[in-house]
Image (tube, rainbow, N blue to C red; front, side, top):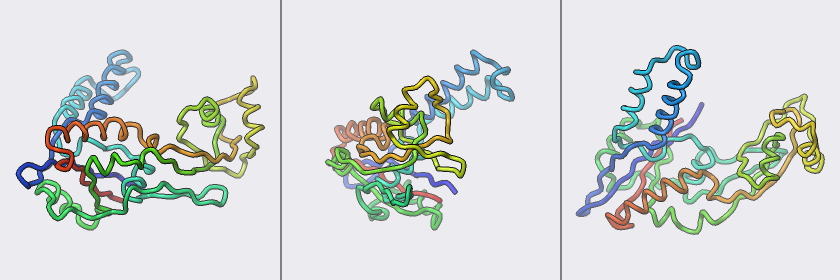
Length: 244
């Protein structure tokens, strides 16, 4: 079963915290991209859809709402925010992301919109937490975590090129695990097939925490800093929980 984050932004005026509404820029971007694809390919490329379907999505994504800032599913980010879905085993070793903090619960002064929303989820919502921009902007993001896993040729090439590969594969019975040196030779050869999944190699690497989620690190933290300029850095925060 998947896990998702439910995140609100709150700002404080005259002691009272209130939830802030905004436009989900990612949802709007995806809706516009899908519409452009439909306009170029039409129903032949995207059967079952009409132009009104995409215009409706764009209209919906353009509306301001409480849950607008962080709606993706990234378990490494969830691990960083609240130690949720943290850790996996590979090659007999456990790898984890260092959390910023353990879940601290719902703030005692949480705004009514968030508190009512959390109450609706009741026991299906867990690992409640909150952070101000200052707490999220600490030196945490300059650190690294040691990770490891079996990489397919495509991911190993990205690693060789210094790119953020971010993915690893599960080893299946018919997979022939090769050494890093053998994989490097294969990637450089004329036989290189980036889509092979039956030829993995095991690798450990140090992952910079700012690469855990580029959108969160750049856009979400950037938005909170900007909002903090209007309200005060201690008067802005995210409040969140997770479902199962």
